[in-house]
Length: 283
Image (cartoon, rainbow, N blue to C red; front, top):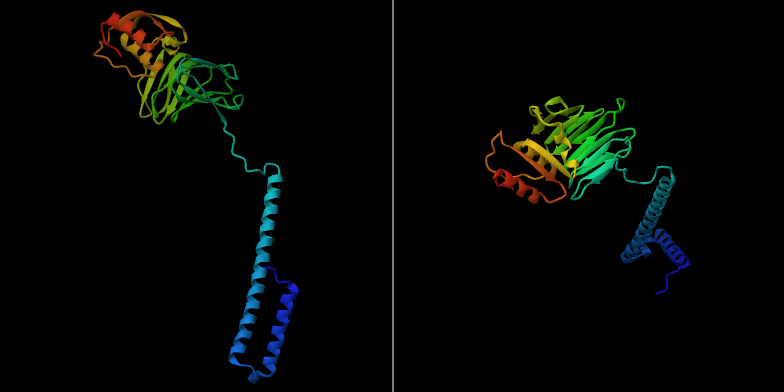
């Protein structure tokens, strides 16, 4: 259907104006129906003009908004970019993994373990143990302490070697091979030195245990000869490295065993040798 031209609309409006003038000059000659029709035409014209003004206002507002968005995007740093993650995640699979850090420190992950390292590590020597067990050999730098976050607990060192095991979403186990390590949590600050191990319970540091310093990194060898090792300590090492909870019968504290533990074969094969030597059923 052809659109009516603007000229046609103007003529129609002019005719309506002339009719209103006639009605004004001779109101008695205009019937009620005619008067109502003229009144309706005036109301329609008023509504149409108001509608056109609103449309022009919103069109102008939309154009201004579009210009502001375009200007914002062109400005340096104006793009809506997501914040960059300050952490790099590193993980191991079914075997241990060696990681050389920027400051010369060395990090070993036990199987199925995960850590996060700060991306600006040269300025902020910060890491987080997210899962499993990790051995840290930290390069000495008194000006830049090395920190490891585990759950909501914090381990801080300057230069030392130690292992941390994340037990669950709350607790950890810390075993120190060399130097001193500060553990900070809800129970305060605790200094753990070489040959000591500590466990937390509900994020509270327990009593210090005296252990063989080699317990911290024994699993870094393919085969390790364990001489007259207390059985309880061996089971603790196994659970820490393999991230398992072993089931066994009653074990006497003075029970000791000598064997070669082979980290190149499956756990169940090593346990079979251990059960043969002890007469227990450890699984």
